[in-house]
Amino acid sequence: RRRPVATGARRLAFSAGVAVTAAIAIAVVALPPATLTSATAGQRDVNSSTAALDRTTVADATSASSDAYRSFSVLDWAGLLRQTTDLAFYEGKTADVVGFVTPSDTDPDDVFYVSRFVITCCAVDAQPVGVPVYLPGWQDQVAADDWVEVTGGFDTNRSSSSQDPVALVPDDVTTVGQPSDPYLY
Image 1 (tube, rainbow, N blue to C red):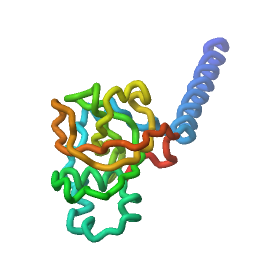
Image 2: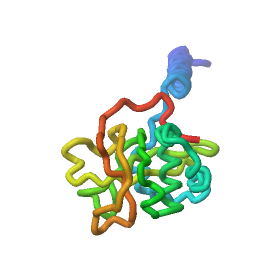
Image 3: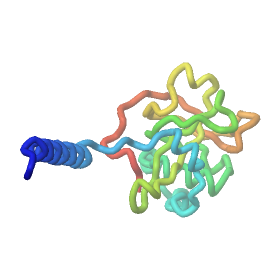
């Protein structure tokens, strides 16, 4: 003999399981994934990806116009900073970069990175790149993970403990919204 109560309970459990599965599937498709943060950047070491940083070369940048420099991304400037520390190269070049704030591991009081993640395939392989910004007391203006636009020129990094010999010295640091596509490719 079958018990009618058990059959009703099975139907209810099955229906609930289908509803939960459908809700999860809709959430996965409809909700955007969380953007990677400064905590992830710290775990993956900013500017450790050599392949991503070789996109813009010093030779290419030397012949660029002043307008072109203003369109260089965090990835372009991070690559150039890795290739040369010659201050003569940076003289007269203004950077205007957008990224999220990542505190420096070696001098978190005076230096932060304007960071972005570079993706070659998917978020799993995302590598953080960043431009060091020398701004003592930066925490009074912005916080880790804030999206900022930083404009300024490059000079000797005055931090005594930072490993970056050249840093962006900002004329302006403005908090901005996260871009619709926060990643670089």
